[in-house]
Image (cartoon, rainbow over all chains, first blue to last red; front, side, top):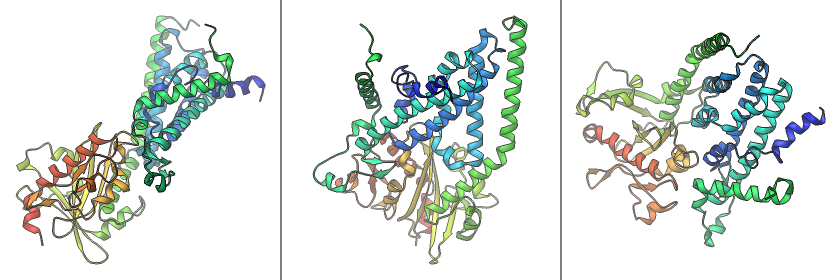
Amino acid sequence: MSTKNLKLLSDPINLNNPITVQVLGICSALAVTVKLEPAVVLSISVLFVLAFANVIISVLRNTIPSRIRIIVQLVVIAALVILVDQVLKAYSYEVSKQLSVFVGLIITNCIIMGRLEAFALGNKPWPSFLDGVGNSAGYAIILIIIAFFRELLGSGTLWGIQVIPDSFYEMGYTNNGFMILPPMALIVVAIIIWVQRSKSRELIEAN
Amino acid sequence: MDTNGNLYTFIYSTVMVIVVATALSFTALKLQPLQEMNVKNEKMQNILTSVRVESTAETANDVFAKYITKSFVVNSKGEEVQGVAAFDINLKQMYKKDAGERELPLYEATLADGTKKIIIPLTGKGLWGPIWGYVALESDMNTVFGAVFDHKGETPGLGADINASWFEEPFTGKTIYEDGKLIGIRVHKGGKGAAIAAGDTEHGVDAISGGTITSKALEAMVLDCLSNYKIYLENNKK
């Protein structure tokens, strides 16, 4: 794999992260990060939809009339999402129940349209595929970090398993109910952005 | 070729819509029988879980036939209605009718130890969408033997936990009558141990922290649905 292609995968994970640098997909970062499990499941679904939508749009890119390109993108995304939903309902009913509303939420995830518009429309299928995988991985990492802290501090569990020992509770420790509420997701995102920018100073704007 | 011409744009969008619509409807039709079977199996599994019988999607049919010895329909006066299949009743539609006209499904389970439990299906509205469940009663028609709940789209990690065993298990052993009056099961806000803190160990369980609206909706659902069966329960208690 060439350095250029490798960069497509690694850039969105850190220096061009869709959530912390491009500030896309904040809505789902806030909605599904109360627990680790739904965050991981949604990340995998986004990976699937984004990688394939990128490839499809990239294959069609020279035929799409530019006036209706947004509509075409939306149709491709929605069709993929519905397809995933139907197949899951038939063959993997348990998973489809867990995902419930999130599957629909993928359609409105701004990262997907953002990548189709910014990358897939102007690049070949293989780089587009890598760009899709890279961006959803960058999205997944942030989602998992947020969910880790919110579940740990808010519920005292990880992946539904209690990790904070009972003796802590007996000594007067209580779960922070505030972590479960949506605003804390934004505050955790802000802390991640802060840490990231103090480590990678090139991200800091001149003014 | 001019991809920005009006004619091209029209043809392009028409073809796109037809292709996508055909592909999606074909998939939906092909998968429908499987999806319906999943829903049916899940209903059987839910009913079985309420009497604490384990089953998987594959075995649900056989296990259901073995343990659920009777399924029947009663009206609001507690009389049995003939000629209606309890399993096929759409509870949500049924509850849209007036209380007097409802045909209410009931299931009787005979467990391995020979005891009989009566299972009452529940349906109601949660915070974001429908919630439903099954409550199994002992033959005194008062003590809860087991309960199972589920939901369409409650908040994950919060209200969605009504289908978690830590929420369902405390229902066992609670009673739905207080001083001869039907009160259902009370849900107490305030985290773990709230029901005990409120001194309500006979009729109360803990609500879900952060999922109060769903918990309260569930409390209302249990009482509303049980009320329909009130006369039947009182006529048949042992």
